[in-house]
Amino acid sequence: MTDERLRLPTSRLQVVLNLGPKRAATLPLPRALQHPDLDAEWDDETQTTAVSVEYPRGQLHLDVTDDGIDYHFHNVSGETSNRSPFARADAAPILEWALAFAADVHALMPELEENAGEAAEWHDQGFTIYVCETEPAQLDLLEIDVEGAILTLPWLGSGRVEQNHIDGDHHPIELLWNPQHEEPDRPIAKAWLDPRTEEPRTASIPGVDWNEVGLPQAEVLEWLEGVYLNHHVIEDPASAVFIAALERIGGVDGSVHRG
Image (cartoon, rainbow, N blue to C red; front, side, top):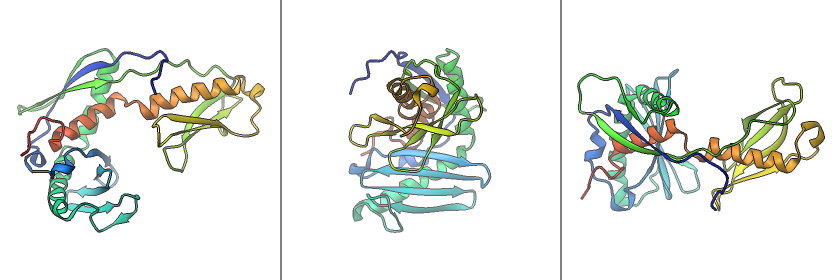
């Protein structure tokens, strides 16, 4: 579905990073598994990098510390398993690649997350090129298209609102409201991602006094949909830079031609 609301234009950001030797990018991937969805997150308390390698048929999750790597699989239903969900001929090469990829990413953390955040800050200030601080090294140039956000008005109702993530499928959030400009604590609406269309859906919470809220129900739901698109659907610049870096580290961004 095409969104016809006003939005900022897509912009090009060039990012120069020191991504290290990229050992995983030298390893062959099975032909059917050339394009994984990648993610990683640094836990400062445990000094652990959680790495996710996801395909439609299953996922491989790896927890990396300086002492080693633990991993497990998820099948197509999302259930945790020690058994690979991939075809027998593909299981060994995808695991070898993922272990090397996870080690490569861990060696760059948490600086890689910090660099992505700094690049996003430069982008927000109108700069088109970000260069990390580094000793002399072979650097990588990433060219990233940053999707423009939808233009939304600030909250025009009474009191204060904020988003709150809630448990459930399809990334649901609720809109909390407080009439006194105190910490929002009353749920008045919710939003989630439609798994069929990948578009946001919204609904109001029963029993809300919309006159007290200060905006009609329809306007609140339209506002919440725009906020949900900006914060949970449209990729923010820091995430765009980070994911592009992961794809370059793994050699799955088209920069490496595998046989």
